[in-house]
Image 1 (tube, helix red, strand yellow):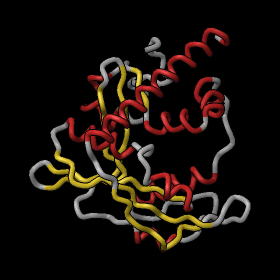
Image 2: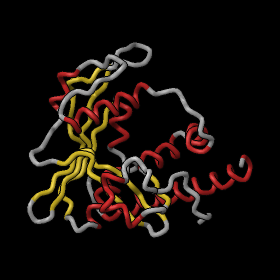
Image 3: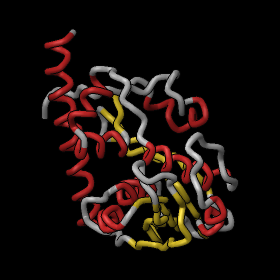
Length: 232
C-alpha cells in the first residue's frame, strides 16, 4: 500500500469530536475516511480532487441538499427548513421512527493507522445486545436499483462496526424514499412511495465492503501524495 495520506485527520477541532469524545479520544490524530468520501472518490474522481485536494468550492447539489433535508428531518422528527421549497413535507411522517431508536449513531472501525467514521441514520438496540440499522436514502429508480446491489456497502460497514462492539446483527437495510421532480423541473418532491430494501449481512459482503474501502484508501493516498508533490 502507498504511504497513508488521507485528506482528513481526527483532531479536537473535528466537528463531531466533542460530542463523541469518549469514543474518539483514543483515535486522536489518526487519519480517517467516511463512507461519503469513499463513494465520492469512487463515483466522482474529478470533483473529489477539486474539492478535497485543491480546496475548490463546488456548486451546491440540489439533490444532495434534498437528501440532507430528509435525513435531518428524520433525525429531529420534524421538517427542517430549506431554501429550495421542497414539497411533500407531509410524507416525512411515513419514514419509520421505531420506539427507542437512536439517530445519527456514531460508528468507528479501527484499521490501526487509520479509521472509518460514520453515522447510522436509524439504530435500534434490542435486548441481549442485538442491533438493527437502517439507512435513509432518496432518489429515482436508478438510485433504488443501486442500493440493492453488492456495491452499496454503507450499512454493511456500519453493521460490521457494531459487530466489533459485540452486537449480533438482526436486520440491515435501506428505507428508500422516492423523489420526484428535478433541477430542470422543480420543485423536488418527497413522495409517499416509500419502502424498505433489506440487505443480507454476511461474511462475504463484509469482506467485499472492507476490500473496497481499503482500495479507496490506497488510491486516495496515492493521488493525494502526487497532488501535494506537484502543487505544494
